[in-house]
Image 1 (cartoon, protein in one colour):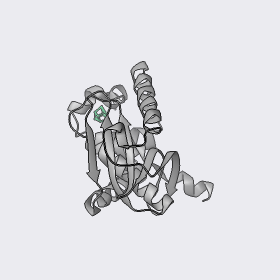
Image 2: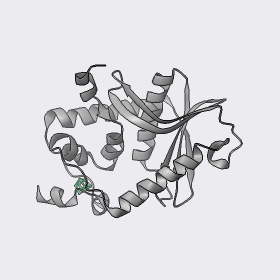
Image 3: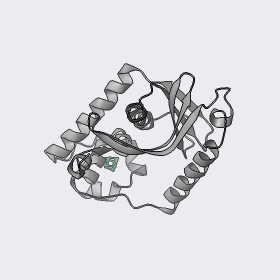
Image 4: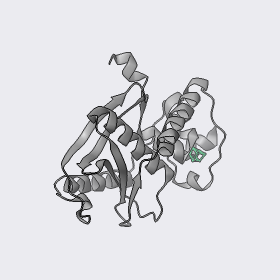
Length: 198
Ligand code: SF4
């Protein structure tokens, strides 16, 4: 893949950001801004990495399940011109029923957010293409709350990932700030100051 092709790909992380608030895509992709990493964010990232490391040494999924791990790939760099995405998958495992992407999130939330789900499905689609093996499901584990969500990857989920990529491309090409539709999310948003100024 040429450097130009690679530059035109969208980071998978932006799928999660889009579902948090589409305006963030405008700030990052059009204005070139990035969120300052706070001490709390660093702590969260380190906790996720430590858990991923532990998971990579286990012979069964998340140490609670009976399902055997037949193979695993850690920090797998993936990109696809057909999906228009690029990223690094923290952990993907092969089981008897197919590939499973595992995402560890340092949150105590009781419910699975749409951003986490669609980001994991996008990673799964990329893994499937790169490894040429069928994708079965995505597993999102909330580290602080202890909840684990396993979601089978359906055609509808795949279609929604593709729809999200189109929406992100549209924001980038129009270079217009999307309308603010979020209120609750603003208080946890790293772009709050700049957003309120514009
Ligand atoms: S402050 Fe609110 S409206 Fe602005 S980008 Fe963040 S979540 Fe979206």
